Image (tube, rainbow, N blue to C red):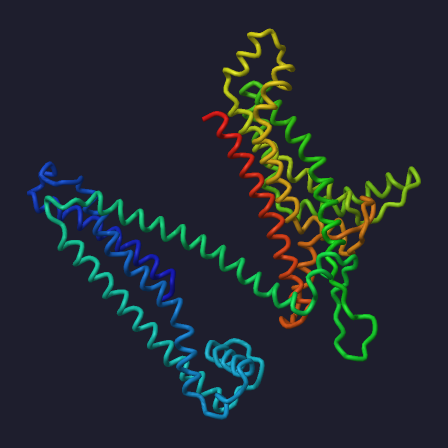
Length: 460
C-alpha cells in the first residue's frame, strides 16, 4: 500500500475506533453517562488515539529506515571485487542498482551482477512492504486492545487524552525545530568545505565576484574570484530602493485605513491592497522587465542619462510595490493596538487629529512599526525572481541605481543550475552565500522580534 492508502485507512480506523470506544464506555454503565468519570466522547478519543498514533509512528520510523537497511543488505551481498571499490564509486554503483530496480535511468549499462543486485533489492523491497503492513496491523490491534482494556467507569479518560495531545504537539514542534537545525547544519558543513578552499577573508572582503573555475590546468582566465562585497552591495542597493517605496506608502496607507477611513471604505480598500501580496513574484518580474525598465530607460534618455536595460532601480521599484501590503498590514495591526484612551487623552488636551497621530499614535506604535519594517527588509533581501528578470546577473560594485547589479539569492540560483560538481568551489560557494544570507536575515529577524516584544510590554 502507498502512503495515500495508509492515510485513508488511518482516518477510517480513527473514526471506527472513536465510535466503538464511545459506545463501549456507555455500555459499561448501561447508557447512563453520569456514572462515567469523563464525557463519553473522551473515551472515544482515547481509543482512537491509541489505535492510530502508535501505528503512524511505527510506519514513519519504518519508512525512514527501510531504504538504508535494504541498500545495506544489498551491498553486503555484492561480490568482493565490487565491495572493494572506493566509497564514492561504491555509492554510485549502489545508486545505479536502486535506479535499475525502480526502472529509472542509470549512469551505466547494467551488467549481470547489477541485474542480480537489482533483483535482490526488489525482493527485499517486497518483503519490507509486507512486513510493514503486518507491523502496522499489529500496532493497531495492540493499541486498540490496550485502550479498551483500560476503559472503566472510573477511568480518567479526559486527562489521558489531553496528555496524548500534549505529547503530539511537543513532537510536532520538535520536528519543526529539528528540521530547521538540519537545514542549518547541512548548509554550515558545505560552507566549511568551501572555506577550506577559499579563505574566509577573501570571501568576506573580496571586491570581485567571478565564480568560474578552470576545467584544465592550462586554461587561462578562469581562476575564479569569490569576493562577496559586490553581491552585498547589489542586495543592499535593491533592498534600500524597495524599502524607500514600501515604507512610506505602506505606513501612510495604514494610517489612513486606521485613523481616517470609515468602516465601509476600510472593508474595500484593505482587501484590495492585500491582493498585491498574493500576486506571484514572477508576474512582478514580467512587469518590471517589460514595463518599468523600458519606461525608466526612455525617461533617462530623454534627460540625457544612460540607464541600463536591466537596472537596480527597476527591480527595487517593483519589489517595493510588492512589499507595500506587507508593511501596511503589520503597521495597521500595531496602530490598531494603540489604546483608544491615549487618543482620547490627546483630544482632551486640545490636540487636533493630525497632532494626535503624529505625536501620540505613531510614536506609541513606532517599535512595532520598526519591527514590521525589519521583517519587510528580510523579505526584500530574499527576493530572487524580480532581480533575475529586471536587475541582471552582473556583479557590479556600484551604488548607481541605474546600473545593472545582482544579489546573493540570484547568484545562489545561478551557481546551482545544471549539472554540478559538489566538490568544486563554484558549487560550494552557493552554500557559503546561503550561510551569510541566513545569518543576515536571522539578525534582522531577531532585531525585529526584540522591537515587537518591547512594544507589547508597554501595554501589558
